[in-house]
Image: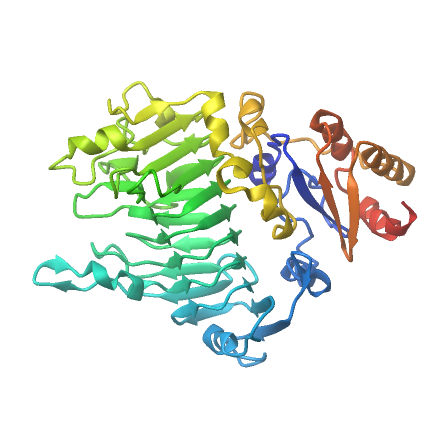
Length: 464
Protein backbone atom coordinates (compact mmCIF):
# COMPACT_ATOMS: atom_id res chain seq x y z
CA UNK A 1 0.00 0.00 0.00
CA UNK A 2 2.87 2.36 0.75
CA UNK A 3 4.22 1.94 -2.77
CA UNK A 4 0.78 2.31 -4.27
CA UNK A 5 0.15 5.46 -2.28
CA UNK A 6 3.50 6.91 -3.26
CA UNK A 7 2.85 6.21 -6.90
CA UNK A 8 -0.33 8.23 -6.63
CA UNK A 9 1.35 11.09 -4.78
CA UNK A 10 2.81 12.25 -8.06
CA UNK A 11 0.51 15.12 -8.97
CA UNK A 12 1.45 16.80 -12.21
CA UNK A 13 -0.88 19.76 -12.01
CA UNK A 14 -3.52 19.36 -14.68
CA UNK A 15 -7.21 19.75 -14.96
CA UNK A 16 -7.92 17.11 -12.37
CA UNK A 17 -10.78 14.79 -11.54
CA UNK A 18 -10.84 13.60 -7.96
CA UNK A 19 -13.59 11.62 -6.33
CA UNK A 20 -13.28 11.70 -2.56
CA UNK A 21 -14.85 8.82 -0.66
CA UNK A 22 -17.31 9.64 2.05
CA UNK A 23 -16.42 6.75 4.32
CA UNK A 24 -12.87 5.52 4.83
CA UNK A 25 -11.33 3.15 7.32
CA UNK A 26 -7.66 4.02 6.76
CA UNK A 27 -5.58 7.17 6.79
CA UNK A 28 -4.52 7.03 3.14
CA UNK A 29 -4.46 10.21 1.12
CA UNK A 30 -7.15 11.67 -1.08
CA UNK A 31 -4.25 12.32 -3.46
CA UNK A 32 -2.35 9.18 -2.70
CA UNK A 33 -4.56 6.11 -3.02
CA UNK A 34 -6.11 4.69 -6.16
CA UNK A 35 -8.84 3.02 -4.12
CA UNK A 36 -11.01 5.86 -2.98
CA UNK A 37 -13.29 3.93 -0.66
CA UNK A 38 -12.35 1.58 2.12
CA UNK A 39 -12.20 -2.16 1.55
CA UNK A 40 -14.99 -2.46 4.11
CA UNK A 41 -17.34 -0.62 1.78
CA UNK A 42 -17.14 -3.05 -1.13
CA UNK A 43 -20.69 -2.44 -2.32
CA UNK A 44 -19.88 1.23 -2.89
CA UNK A 45 -16.60 0.37 -4.58
CA UNK A 46 -18.25 -2.09 -6.93
CA UNK A 47 -20.61 0.64 -8.02
CA UNK A 48 -17.87 3.20 -8.53
CA UNK A 49 -19.02 3.89 -12.08
CA UNK A 50 -22.72 3.60 -11.37
CA UNK A 51 -23.52 5.88 -8.45
CA UNK A 52 -27.19 6.83 -8.74
CA UNK A 53 -27.25 4.78 -11.96
CA UNK A 54 -25.28 7.50 -13.74
CA UNK A 55 -22.28 7.34 -16.04
CA UNK A 56 -21.00 10.36 -18.03
CA UNK A 57 -24.05 12.33 -17.00
CA UNK A 58 -26.53 9.86 -18.48
CA UNK A 59 -28.78 7.53 -16.55
CA UNK A 60 -27.92 3.87 -16.95
CA UNK A 61 -30.57 2.35 -19.17
CA UNK A 62 -30.17 -1.08 -17.64
CA UNK A 63 -27.83 -2.92 -15.28
CA UNK A 64 -27.55 -6.69 -14.86
CA UNK A 65 -25.48 -8.96 -12.63
CA UNK A 66 -23.52 -12.05 -13.65
CA UNK A 67 -22.60 -14.76 -11.12
CA UNK A 68 -20.91 -18.05 -11.85
CA UNK A 69 -22.84 -19.78 -9.07
CA UNK A 70 -26.26 -18.91 -10.49
CA UNK A 71 -27.21 -16.42 -7.77
CA UNK A 72 -27.71 -13.50 -10.18
CA UNK A 73 -29.46 -12.64 -13.43
CA UNK A 74 -27.03 -14.59 -15.60
CA UNK A 75 -24.21 -17.11 -15.28
CA UNK A 76 -22.17 -15.89 -18.27
CA UNK A 77 -21.22 -12.49 -19.65
CA UNK A 78 -22.37 -13.55 -23.12
CA UNK A 79 -25.85 -14.22 -21.76
CA UNK A 80 -25.89 -10.81 -20.12
CA UNK A 81 -24.94 -9.07 -23.37
CA UNK A 82 -27.99 -10.65 -24.97
CA UNK A 83 -30.19 -8.72 -22.55
CA UNK A 84 -28.87 -5.30 -23.57
CA UNK A 85 -31.47 -2.65 -24.46
CA UNK A 86 -31.23 -1.18 -27.98
CA UNK A 87 -29.71 2.11 -26.81
CA UNK A 88 -28.28 3.87 -23.75
CA UNK A 89 -25.56 2.77 -21.37
CA UNK A 90 -25.73 -0.88 -20.36
CA UNK A 91 -23.98 -2.04 -17.19
CA UNK A 92 -22.78 -5.56 -16.46
CA UNK A 93 -21.51 -6.24 -12.96
CA UNK A 94 -19.61 -9.54 -12.88
CA UNK A 95 -19.24 -11.15 -9.46
CA UNK A 96 -16.04 -12.86 -8.40
CA UNK A 97 -15.31 -16.06 -10.27
CA UNK A 98 -13.50 -17.52 -13.26
CA UNK A 99 -15.53 -17.17 -16.45
CA UNK A 100 -14.26 -19.42 -19.23
CA UNK A 101 -15.86 -17.89 -22.27
CA UNK A 102 -15.16 -15.93 -25.42
CA UNK A 103 -16.81 -12.52 -25.09
CA UNK A 104 -17.72 -10.37 -28.10
CA UNK A 105 -19.01 -6.87 -27.35
CA UNK A 106 -20.44 -5.22 -30.45
CA UNK A 107 -23.00 -2.99 -28.74
CA UNK A 108 -21.86 0.59 -27.92
CA UNK A 109 -21.76 2.06 -24.40
CA UNK A 110 -21.23 -1.13 -22.42
CA UNK A 111 -19.85 -0.80 -18.88
CA UNK A 112 -18.25 -4.00 -17.60
CA UNK A 113 -16.97 -4.11 -14.04
CA UNK A 114 -16.01 -6.75 -11.53
CA UNK A 115 -14.88 -7.25 -7.95
CA UNK A 116 -11.19 -6.70 -8.62
CA UNK A 117 -8.12 -7.95 -10.41
CA UNK A 118 -7.70 -11.68 -9.79
CA UNK A 119 -11.24 -11.93 -8.43
CA UNK A 120 -13.34 -11.45 -11.53
CA UNK A 121 -11.45 -13.33 -14.25
CA UNK A 122 -12.45 -13.79 -17.89
CA UNK A 123 -10.26 -16.49 -19.38
CA UNK A 124 -9.55 -18.31 -22.62
CA UNK A 125 -6.73 -20.30 -24.21
CA UNK A 126 -6.99 -19.95 -27.97
CA UNK A 127 -3.86 -19.39 -30.06
CA UNK A 128 -3.16 -19.12 -33.76
CA UNK A 129 -2.79 -22.56 -35.33
CA UNK A 130 0.21 -23.55 -37.41
CA UNK A 131 -0.35 -24.91 -40.90
CA UNK A 132 2.44 -26.03 -43.23
CA UNK A 133 4.98 -24.62 -40.77
CA UNK A 134 3.39 -21.17 -40.98
CA UNK A 135 1.38 -19.38 -38.33
CA UNK A 136 -2.15 -18.62 -39.52
CA UNK A 137 -2.13 -14.98 -38.47
CA UNK A 138 -5.52 -14.47 -40.12
CA UNK A 139 -6.88 -16.37 -37.11
CA UNK A 140 -5.69 -13.73 -34.63
CA UNK A 141 -9.16 -12.18 -34.08
CA UNK A 142 -10.47 -15.66 -33.26
CA UNK A 143 -7.91 -16.08 -30.47
CA UNK A 144 -9.11 -13.10 -28.42
CA UNK A 145 -10.70 -13.90 -25.07
CA UNK A 146 -12.55 -10.56 -25.13
CA UNK A 147 -13.26 -8.56 -28.29
CA UNK A 148 -14.72 -5.05 -28.04
CA UNK A 149 -16.01 -3.28 -31.15
CA UNK A 150 -18.81 -1.20 -29.66
CA UNK A 151 -17.69 2.37 -29.02
CA UNK A 152 -17.69 4.03 -25.59
CA UNK A 153 -16.66 0.86 -23.76
CA UNK A 154 -15.61 0.99 -20.09
CA UNK A 155 -14.02 -1.86 -18.13
CA UNK A 156 -12.95 -1.77 -14.51
CA UNK A 157 -11.67 -4.20 -11.87
CA UNK A 158 -11.49 -7.34 -14.02
CA UNK A 159 -8.79 -9.69 -15.27
CA UNK A 160 -8.84 -10.65 -18.94
CA UNK A 161 -6.42 -13.43 -19.78
CA UNK A 162 -5.30 -15.84 -22.46
CA UNK A 163 -3.71 -18.93 -20.93
CA UNK A 164 -2.31 -20.40 -24.15
CA UNK A 165 1.18 -19.92 -22.73
CA UNK A 166 4.45 -19.40 -24.60
CA UNK A 167 3.29 -21.42 -27.62
CA UNK A 168 5.22 -19.30 -30.09
CA UNK A 169 2.06 -18.14 -31.83
CA UNK A 170 -0.21 -15.13 -31.20
CA UNK A 171 -2.77 -15.58 -28.43
CA UNK A 172 -4.77 -12.40 -27.77
CA UNK A 173 -6.36 -11.69 -24.39
CA UNK A 174 -8.09 -8.38 -25.24
CA UNK A 175 -8.80 -7.06 -28.71
CA UNK A 176 -10.14 -3.51 -28.46
CA UNK A 177 -11.43 -1.51 -31.43
CA UNK A 178 -13.71 0.72 -29.34
CA UNK A 179 -13.48 4.47 -29.86
CA UNK A 180 -13.29 6.63 -26.72
CA UNK A 181 -12.83 3.56 -24.56
CA UNK A 182 -11.43 3.37 -21.04
CA UNK A 183 -9.82 0.32 -19.44
CA UNK A 184 -9.33 1.09 -15.77
CA UNK A 185 -7.66 -0.97 -13.03
CA UNK A 186 -7.72 -4.15 -15.10
CA UNK A 187 -5.19 -6.92 -15.68
CA UNK A 188 -4.62 -8.00 -19.27
CA UNK A 189 -2.63 -11.19 -19.07
CA UNK A 190 -1.02 -13.39 -21.68
CA UNK A 191 2.14 -14.10 -23.61
CA UNK A 192 2.53 -13.19 -27.30
CA UNK A 193 0.20 -10.42 -28.56
CA UNK A 194 -1.62 -10.06 -25.24
CA UNK A 195 -3.28 -6.72 -25.95
CA UNK A 196 -4.45 -5.83 -29.44
CA UNK A 197 -5.22 -2.11 -29.25
CA UNK A 198 -6.58 -2.23 -32.75
CA UNK A 199 -7.82 1.26 -33.70
CA UNK A 200 -9.43 4.45 -32.40
CA UNK A 201 -8.99 6.48 -29.18
CA UNK A 202 -8.21 4.35 -26.15
CA UNK A 203 -7.01 4.93 -22.58
CA UNK A 204 -5.53 2.35 -20.21
CA UNK A 205 -5.34 3.66 -16.66
CA UNK A 206 -3.54 1.84 -13.81
CA UNK A 207 -3.66 -1.51 -15.57
CA UNK A 208 -1.32 -4.50 -15.41
CA UNK A 209 -0.40 -5.75 -18.89
CA UNK A 210 1.71 -8.91 -19.05
CA UNK A 211 3.31 -10.79 -21.93
CA UNK A 212 6.31 -11.62 -24.07
CA UNK A 213 6.56 -10.75 -27.78
CA UNK A 214 4.63 -7.71 -29.07
CA UNK A 215 2.35 -7.87 -26.06
CA UNK A 216 1.01 -4.37 -26.69
CA UNK A 217 0.35 -4.06 -30.39
CA UNK A 218 -2.06 -2.55 -32.92
CA UNK A 219 -2.80 0.77 -34.58
CA UNK A 220 -4.83 2.58 -31.93
CA UNK A 221 -4.28 6.13 -30.79
CA UNK A 222 -3.77 5.05 -27.21
CA UNK A 223 -2.45 6.41 -23.93
CA UNK A 224 -1.26 4.14 -21.15
CA UNK A 225 -1.05 6.01 -17.86
CA UNK A 226 0.44 4.58 -14.65
CA UNK A 227 0.33 1.01 -15.96
CA UNK A 228 2.64 -1.88 -15.09
CA UNK A 229 4.18 -3.62 -18.10
CA UNK A 230 5.12 -7.06 -16.83
CA UNK A 231 7.53 -8.99 -19.03
CA UNK A 232 7.57 -12.80 -19.19
CA UNK A 233 10.16 -15.25 -20.47
CA UNK A 234 9.28 -16.22 -24.08
CA UNK A 235 11.37 -19.39 -24.02
CA UNK A 236 13.19 -21.08 -26.89
CA UNK A 237 15.92 -18.43 -27.01
CA UNK A 238 13.55 -15.73 -28.27
CA UNK A 239 13.67 -12.05 -27.43
CA UNK A 240 10.86 -9.81 -26.20
CA UNK A 241 9.51 -6.62 -27.73
CA UNK A 242 7.00 -4.87 -25.51
CA UNK A 243 5.30 -2.91 -28.30
CA UNK A 244 4.54 -3.43 -31.98
CA UNK A 245 2.73 -0.31 -33.11
CA UNK A 246 1.26 -0.44 -36.60
CA UNK A 247 1.09 3.05 -38.09
CA UNK A 248 1.69 2.68 -41.81
CA UNK A 249 0.74 6.06 -43.33
CA UNK A 250 1.68 9.19 -41.35
CA UNK A 251 -0.51 11.42 -43.53
CA UNK A 252 -3.76 9.57 -42.89
CA UNK A 253 -3.07 7.82 -39.59
CA UNK A 254 -2.54 9.72 -36.35
CA UNK A 255 -2.09 6.64 -34.23
CA UNK A 256 0.58 5.86 -31.67
CA UNK A 257 1.18 4.34 -28.24
CA UNK A 258 2.01 6.82 -25.47
CA UNK A 259 3.21 5.48 -22.12
CA UNK A 260 3.14 7.93 -19.22
CA UNK A 261 4.36 7.16 -15.71
CA UNK A 262 4.43 3.42 -16.38
CA UNK A 263 6.63 0.79 -14.72
CA UNK A 264 8.46 -1.76 -16.89
CA UNK A 265 9.73 -4.77 -15.01
CA UNK A 266 9.89 -8.57 -15.04
CA UNK A 267 6.78 -10.54 -14.18
CA UNK A 268 6.82 -11.66 -10.55
CA UNK A 269 8.65 -14.98 -10.27
CA UNK A 270 9.97 -14.89 -13.86
CA UNK A 271 13.67 -15.09 -14.67
CA UNK A 272 14.69 -13.09 -17.72
CA UNK A 273 18.36 -14.04 -17.50
CA UNK A 274 19.74 -14.21 -21.02
CA UNK A 275 16.54 -12.80 -22.54
CA UNK A 276 16.82 -9.57 -24.50
CA UNK A 277 13.83 -7.30 -23.94
CA UNK A 278 13.25 -4.26 -26.12
CA UNK A 279 10.83 -1.36 -25.82
CA UNK A 280 9.41 -2.18 -29.22
CA UNK A 281 9.77 -3.07 -32.85
CA UNK A 282 8.07 -1.59 -35.93
CA UNK A 283 5.09 -3.62 -37.07
CA UNK A 284 4.67 -1.07 -39.88
CA UNK A 285 7.09 1.45 -41.37
CA UNK A 286 5.83 4.52 -39.50
CA UNK A 287 5.40 2.90 -36.11
CA UNK A 288 5.14 5.49 -33.31
CA UNK A 289 5.76 4.85 -29.60
CA UNK A 290 6.58 7.34 -26.83
CA UNK A 291 7.77 6.57 -23.31
CA UNK A 292 7.68 9.56 -20.95
CA UNK A 293 8.15 9.67 -17.19
CA UNK A 294 8.39 5.88 -16.98
CA UNK A 295 10.54 3.58 -14.89
CA UNK A 296 12.53 1.05 -16.93
CA UNK A 297 14.25 -1.72 -15.01
CA UNK A 298 17.48 -3.36 -16.11
CA UNK A 299 15.62 -5.93 -18.22
CA UNK A 300 15.62 -3.42 -21.11
CA UNK A 301 18.39 -4.03 -23.64
CA UNK A 302 20.58 -0.91 -24.00
CA UNK A 303 19.69 -0.79 -27.72
CA UNK A 304 16.14 -0.01 -26.64
CA UNK A 305 14.55 -0.84 -29.99
CA UNK A 306 14.88 -3.68 -32.47
CA UNK A 307 14.06 -4.43 -36.12
CA UNK A 308 10.87 -6.33 -36.93
CA UNK A 309 13.04 -9.20 -38.07
CA UNK A 310 16.25 -9.06 -36.09
CA UNK A 311 18.04 -11.31 -38.57
CA UNK A 312 17.07 -9.32 -41.68
CA UNK A 313 16.74 -5.65 -40.72
CA UNK A 314 14.97 -3.22 -43.04
CA UNK A 315 17.00 -0.03 -43.09
CA UNK A 316 14.15 2.08 -44.49
CA UNK A 317 12.22 1.55 -41.28
CA UNK A 318 14.98 3.10 -39.20
CA UNK A 319 14.34 6.45 -40.90
CA UNK A 320 10.56 6.50 -40.70
CA UNK A 321 9.67 5.25 -37.23
CA UNK A 322 9.05 7.60 -34.30
CA UNK A 323 10.50 6.02 -31.17
CA UNK A 324 10.72 8.78 -28.62
CA UNK A 325 11.77 8.97 -24.96
CA UNK A 326 11.50 11.71 -22.40
CA UNK A 327 12.31 11.90 -18.69
CA UNK A 328 12.42 8.18 -17.98
CA UNK A 329 14.25 6.66 -15.00
CA UNK A 330 15.82 3.37 -14.03
CA UNK A 331 18.70 1.25 -15.31
CA UNK A 332 16.91 0.57 -18.59
CA UNK A 333 16.27 4.25 -19.30
CA UNK A 334 19.87 5.13 -20.14
CA UNK A 335 19.82 6.29 -23.78
CA UNK A 336 23.54 6.58 -24.57
CA UNK A 337 23.64 3.17 -26.27
CA UNK A 338 20.29 3.29 -28.04
CA UNK A 339 20.22 2.18 -31.69
CA UNK A 340 21.37 4.98 -33.99
CA UNK A 341 18.22 5.23 -36.08
CA UNK A 342 17.01 8.56 -37.35
CA UNK A 343 13.62 7.99 -35.76
CA UNK A 344 14.98 7.08 -32.31
CA UNK A 345 15.71 10.06 -30.11
CA UNK A 346 15.24 11.79 -26.78
CA UNK A 347 12.75 14.62 -27.15
CA UNK A 348 12.41 18.00 -25.50
CA UNK A 349 9.70 19.11 -23.12
CA UNK A 350 8.01 21.07 -25.90
CA UNK A 351 7.90 17.97 -28.10
CA UNK A 352 6.64 15.82 -25.24
CA UNK A 353 3.69 18.19 -24.83
CA UNK A 354 2.32 16.88 -28.14
CA UNK A 355 1.70 13.54 -26.51
CA UNK A 356 -0.24 14.51 -23.39
CA UNK A 357 -3.83 13.37 -22.91
CA UNK A 358 -5.50 16.59 -23.99
CA UNK A 359 -3.28 17.14 -27.04
CA UNK A 360 -2.92 13.61 -28.38
CA UNK A 361 -6.41 12.16 -27.88
CA UNK A 362 -8.46 15.24 -26.93
CA UNK A 363 -9.05 13.46 -23.65
CA UNK A 364 -10.17 16.58 -21.81
CA UNK A 365 -13.26 16.57 -24.05
CA UNK A 366 -14.48 13.07 -23.21
CA UNK A 367 -12.53 11.45 -20.37
CA UNK A 368 -13.80 13.52 -17.40
CA UNK A 369 -17.27 12.11 -17.98
CA UNK A 370 -16.01 8.53 -17.80
CA UNK A 371 -13.46 8.51 -14.99
CA UNK A 372 -14.61 8.24 -11.41
CA UNK A 373 -12.33 7.97 -8.43
CA UNK A 374 -9.11 8.53 -10.33
CA UNK A 375 -6.71 11.23 -11.40
CA UNK A 376 -5.97 11.54 -15.09
CA UNK A 377 -3.19 13.88 -16.01
CA UNK A 378 -4.16 15.87 -19.05
CA UNK A 379 -1.83 18.69 -19.98
CA UNK A 380 1.70 19.88 -20.59
CA UNK A 381 2.21 20.33 -16.85
CA UNK A 382 2.85 16.58 -16.85
CA UNK A 383 6.18 17.33 -18.48
CA UNK A 384 6.87 20.50 -16.50
CA UNK A 385 6.73 18.80 -13.13
CA UNK A 386 8.41 15.50 -13.95
CA UNK A 387 11.68 16.75 -12.50
CA UNK A 388 9.96 17.60 -9.23
CA UNK A 389 8.13 14.36 -8.51
CA UNK A 390 8.16 10.81 -9.87
CA UNK A 391 5.51 8.12 -10.08
CA UNK A 392 8.10 5.60 -8.93
CA UNK A 393 9.12 7.21 -5.67
CA UNK A 394 8.51 4.53 -3.06
CA UNK A 395 9.36 6.61 -0.01
CA UNK A 396 6.76 6.24 2.72
CA UNK A 397 4.66 9.38 2.99
CA UNK A 398 3.79 10.48 6.51
CA UNK A 399 0.06 10.99 7.00
CA UNK A 400 -0.80 14.44 8.33
CA UNK A 401 -3.09 15.00 11.26
CA UNK A 402 -6.73 14.92 10.16
CA UNK A 403 -8.36 18.33 9.83
CA UNK A 404 -11.08 19.48 12.17
CA UNK A 405 -14.68 19.86 11.00
CA UNK A 406 -14.36 23.63 10.72
CA UNK A 407 -11.09 23.29 8.81
CA UNK A 408 -12.73 20.98 6.26
CA UNK A 409 -15.50 23.46 5.55
CA UNK A 410 -13.05 26.36 5.35
CA UNK A 411 -10.81 24.45 2.94
CA UNK A 412 -13.73 23.57 0.70
CA UNK A 413 -14.84 27.19 0.66
CA UNK A 414 -11.31 28.26 -0.27
CA UNK A 415 -11.39 25.80 -3.16
CA UNK A 416 -14.67 27.28 -4.29
CA UNK A 417 -13.06 30.70 -4.20
CA UNK A 418 -10.34 29.45 -6.55
CA UNK A 419 -12.90 28.47 -9.14
CA UNK A 420 -13.64 24.90 -8.05
CA UNK A 421 -16.99 23.60 -9.20
CA UNK A 422 -18.51 21.13 -6.72
CA UNK A 423 -21.10 18.52 -7.68
CA UNK A 424 -22.67 16.14 -5.18
CA UNK A 425 -22.96 12.51 -6.29
CA UNK A 426 -24.38 10.43 -3.44
CA UNK A 427 -21.39 8.98 -1.50
CA UNK A 428 -18.84 10.85 -3.56
CA UNK A 429 -17.84 14.45 -4.05
CA UNK A 430 -16.55 15.24 -7.55
CA UNK A 431 -14.01 18.02 -7.96
CA UNK A 432 -13.42 19.53 -11.39
CA UNK A 433 -11.15 22.51 -11.46
CA UNK A 434 -8.92 24.52 -13.72
CA UNK A 435 -7.56 26.83 -11.06
CA UNK A 436 -3.93 27.52 -10.28
CA UNK A 437 -2.82 24.09 -9.13
CA UNK A 438 -0.09 25.38 -6.88
CA UNK A 439 -2.81 27.03 -4.79
CA UNK A 440 -5.18 24.08 -4.92
CA UNK A 441 -2.72 21.29 -4.15
CA UNK A 442 -1.86 22.28 -0.56
CA UNK A 443 -5.54 22.76 0.20
CA UNK A 444 -6.35 19.28 -1.03
CA UNK A 445 -3.48 17.83 0.98
CA UNK A 446 -5.07 19.26 4.10
CA UNK A 447 -8.04 16.98 3.43
CA UNK A 448 -5.91 13.85 3.78
CA UNK A 449 -8.02 11.23 5.29
CA UNK A 450 -9.49 10.01 8.49
CA UNK A 451 -12.76 8.13 8.65
CA UNK A 452 -14.30 10.72 10.98
CA UNK A 453 -13.29 13.63 8.78
CA UNK A 454 -14.68 12.16 5.59
CA UNK A 455 -17.87 11.08 7.27
CA UNK A 456 -18.39 14.67 8.36
CA UNK A 457 -17.43 15.78 4.85
CA UNK A 458 -20.31 13.70 3.46
CA UNK A 459 -22.84 14.80 6.06
CA UNK A 460 -22.13 18.47 5.41
CA UNK A 461 -22.38 18.33 1.60
CA UNK A 462 -25.53 20.40 1.55
CA UNK A 463 -24.14 23.18 3.75
CA UNK A 464 -21.70 24.58 1.22
